[in-house]
Image (cartoon, rainbow, N blue to C red; front, top):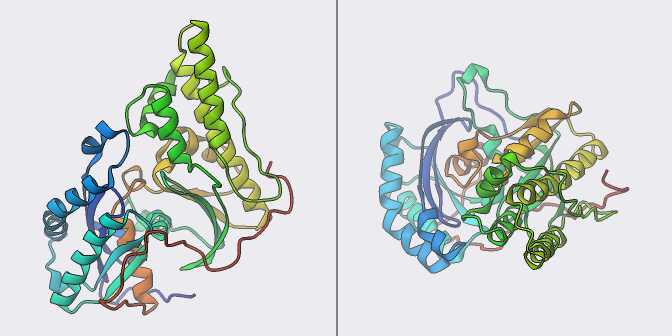
Length: 360
């Protein structure tokens, strides 16, 4: 799928994005697929912290309470009216059904009222296109180059995606059990840390020794898949042994050793796949891509340029949905008002490819 970029003299294309796949109510306006004119996020972290995770019914009710204000604020910050928007992009899936419905219905209503095109976006695709969003001045922006390998790491997904052009995806592999972000949350609870676990473990690991405990790295020879359940179990057993021995809990060392195991697994398999498929660049996106240890590990290697979204765009947001929507808009894609949510919608265009050798 090849998309043709507009000429420099063409009118600016402005996409309104709406994202409600989980517990963030978000809206944004992005110009020409790269430059956010606004990016509004109403977080529900404080609401769900008491549950130690996202409570679906509560999330959908919170979306209903805030969606109108969030969309209005996004348009106001962009200094644009709905009539000046070229299209409306909205997360269709994957995600929590009740949460997705709120955003999709809002987008349908806006599209119907304004006669603007409606474009349903895959949430994972949005995370990929967060790497096309600029945090600098337009002249300093250098978008990723194809072919590239995308590592998606979030609370619900850990996947390796090969891209040879815009909107063209080949899923090489994915997690067989816990996603990386999910593992961070579960281990965070094991260690008695606050929700969400990713930032809490990163902070706890700051002064820890990552070699204090040698936690396992699941290599899964012959595939591009990941597995983090064994690592989670190893941390659990270590914590139980420490509690039985009465030796105290070296929290910083446990957090640092766990974090190092996740980072090592993600980086080693990604680099191996990048070599195998001869990509030009690597893209890392999703909530876990904000992790400083993961960023440092990728930046320390010299084989491949690596793109990370700006930290503020790593977690769920609507600017990434608008960015993906821009490329669909250029390709002439448009959905009808009869589209429905797809809670388990995979980002997949071809068969899963097998790994020819060990991922070292």
